[in-house]
Length: 226
Image (cartoon, rainbow, N blue to C red):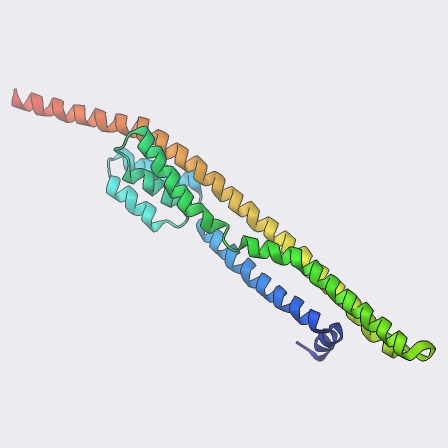
């Protein structure tokens, strides 16, 4: 931070340091959430196709391992369904819903704090503007007609700098929150789709495959016994 930036912070008064602290906090929250959501968002269609291919070969343990090694809520929901593959439809649905309820709140964690920064920043800037104008009027009252431009400029600097800094913080914070919220919605859609798709597969296709192979084994066993 060079001398000119420090000078602007000093002219903006203590409110500028509050805005700077909010800006640093908002940046940290944004980067942390962006990395977390990036790791948690997988290609749900390709992932589920791979799990289905493994299940088609009746390798349930391997499919569960694949889910454990994959990051994100989609893999966790699919894993929960696999662990309850032998249950009835109601129990299977409850297992998938419980897994989703457990995983999804982590996606929205700290988004509220980022939204709060975007909403609070203009109010903090307004406070700085009021304080700056108060300083200006006090200088005018104390100096009367002899008040110098330099005495009046201090309060005007504070009012303008804090208002501008607050807007410069609030606008990117709103955009960052909108971007992250869009990522969360996309992951939620993937979770809902993956949960419904794996349930349908386990209840229909997988059980049909298991039944056919079981019948084939019984036929071979019966033929061998004859």
